Structure formats: structure tokens, C-alpha cells
Image 1 (tube, rainbow, N blue to C red):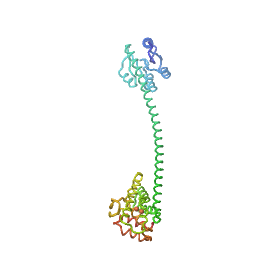
Image 2 (cartoon, rainbow, N blue to C red):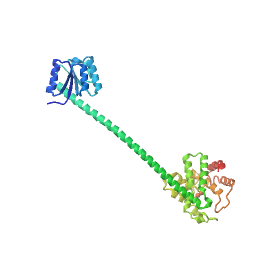
Image 3 (tube, protein in one colour):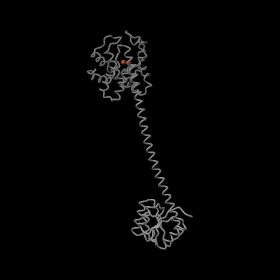
Image 4 (tube, protein in one colour):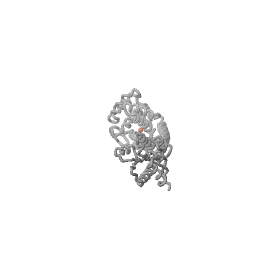
Length: 356
Ligand SMILES: [Fe+2]
Ligand SMILES: [Fe+2]
């Protein structure tokens, strides 16, 4: 029966090699390529896909030994069997260091010879399969890496688009709320542009205190929105020319909480909401709505409170037609440092009064 397996037999054409080749071809059923020299052996190795190489003892000279190295260079999985006239331990050690699979020595045991050839071919098949599998894995990995890169790029693009959409949405919200806050200022012609001026003063104080850009921006936004809650206060109270009754005052005192409640669903304004809620708290705890004290009041709210009070004093109001002069308003802030206002924030305020 014809066996699958190609054997390259490199040896002199002597009796023993003829016998072995015949046995391989006729008894073993292998396909045998025969070459007599190292050079023609190498050329045959290049031209044919062989499973094993058998090198006969007579060719185990320097050139033939170099040939084993060449085979291994060309095909690292190449299986080489050496045929020896006699077993010399040193030579064997060297041959194994070159990478031969096994050897057979005189007197030749045919059964062992066939066993070695069969096992050598099986080993070569296994190594080829392993190499193909590894190569397949490598190609799959490369393809997966490419797909991953594509996927990462798509995710990056989608994230960028989402971020842009989120920013658009955020700025639309901000514009809407700002317009609302401006509309509230404009409800009463006395408070027209109030929030805008408060924002300017508050950011000047915050910068003077050395706050970071993010905190200054939160203070600016909070200043623009701080009286948003007045939307829930009746005009008759907001624009009342005379003194307010205690019930009316109770209504007015609700505006910081109403403002915070309106903004609460807008999570991107988290840094701003506390400032809106606390902008009427006094440093000594006598303010509203919660009666917070000292550092329990957000620093941004303490700053905002000074800017708000100063702006209100410098502007005409329904209950006070003639505003205070700049100096008188500054004096008032100074006078209430440590009670109504945070002394450190007042200190910073006093340093920026020429810019007001
Ligand atoms: Fe207010
Ligand atoms: Fe205000």
C-alpha cells in the first residue's frame, strides 16, 4: 500500500543504501527522492516538499554536516535521520546539537528503521499542522487587532459626536436659563442688568482670592442665575415701593430655594446650585434660607453675597429711589465684615473696588 510521505535520501549509491531505498519504496510504499551529493541534496530539498531527510554515514563529512544546518535554516521543522556506520558518542552529541531527529546504525534493524521513518513523518505532519495553526492564529489576531482599531475609532468618533451634542445641549440650556434670568431682572426696571453686574463683581473678587478658573466660572454662572427663583414671587411683592410685611418677606426669602429647585435637574450645574441656594446666607448665621454660618457657607456663595449686596446698594430700587454712592456702598460692606460678610472675601473686595 502506498504510504503518504516523501523521503529525501542523500547517500552514496552503495549496497546498503540501495537496500534501504528499495525497502522504503517497495515495502514501505514511501515516495523516495535519491541524491548522491550534498549539493544535489540541497537542491532537491529546495525543489521538493519532503517530510524527512535521511543522510547516510558516508556523507557525514563537514559539507554534509553543514547541510543539516542549511535544512534547518530553510525549514525549522525539517526532520533529519542520520544513518551511521558506527555509534560514536561525540559525533552523536554533535548531530543532536544540529537538530537531527534520531539516528540508525549498523547493523540496520529494518523494523526500527521503518518505525523511525513513520514517527519522523508523523512528527513533521504535526509540526506543519502546528505551524499552520500558529500562523492562522497570528492572522486571526492581526485581523482582530484591525477590527479592534476600527471599533475603537468608531467609538472615539461616536464619543466625540456625543460630547459635541452634550455640549450643544448644555449651552442651549444655559442660554435658555440665562434668558430666563435676564427676563426676571427685566421684570423690574430697577433690577435691569442686576445679575450681569453681580457676575462681573463676583468674578473680580474670586480672581483676587486666587480661585481656579473652574471655580471662577461656576461663580460667574451662579451670579447670572442667582435670582432665578424670583420667578416664583409675585410682582406686587417684588416691586412693592414700601416696606414689606412679614408674610411678604417670607415669600422673598424663598427665592434662593426656588432657584436651586429649578436648576436641580440640570446635573451639569451641580457646582452652581449650592451657590444659588446660599447666596443670602450671612457669615454670622443670620441669613436665609438655612441660617448657615462661616465656612459652612460655600465660598462662592460668600463672594456672590458681597457682589449682590454691593450691586443692590449702588442701584435704585422700588423701595429706595436714590442709590448709595460707591464710597457709601463700600463703607457699608466694610462695616458688615465678619457679621454679614466673610472678612477674607471683604478684604479681596476692597482690593478691587477701583475696577467696579
Ligand atoms: Fe437674591
Ligand atoms: Fe440679587
